[in-house]
Length: 115
Length: 118
Image (tube, rainbow over all chains, first blue to last red; front, side):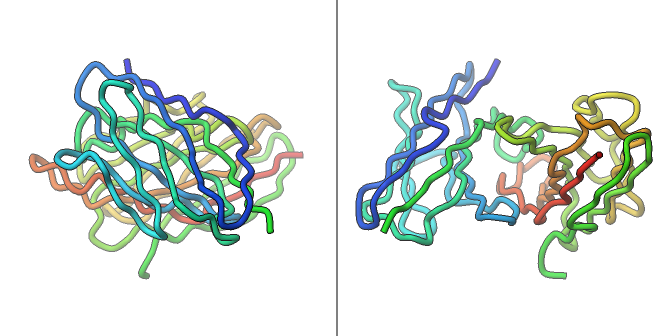
């Protein structure tokens, strides 16, 4: 069975500081991994995804994530936080590309950015 | 429209009443999903429609919940005899899935319908 664990339901960083949001997954088959972001009172939108190929994936707004099979992790990073990055971030795993109904979601991490 | 549209954006109802939530997916997207988002609970899958196939209803929490998708486009989620525990944000998402190929794997979400049951 697949599962996703996001470590830290709340993360607070200063503006300009490194953002690191942790995601670990469990999957018996090669996973497809996603990060979505939800800004206040909005729906979710895709930040980035890993399917196959290069393990370092770049997304929108300067975010990137690295798939580490040995650590079963897909942590999200951004070198320098901006106030506009304050949002809820969700990690998700799927057993197969396109079979979205099998997306398993983490509980989310709320990112606060302090001036 | 350009994105997934949901209505109403907010709905307050009394316990025991029925509610209908509407989702208008992106034109051409064959897959449509309903999720429920409760505080601190992440995203809970409810139901999935794919083209003309029978919907996957495995996530519906009780028989008070039902959904339909007319003409492969607009979907309505109906909650009968609402209970306070039904209070949540109901999110709809659509996806351009290509059967046999897999599609992009990207879901496009609406802004959600916030349901409050008093």
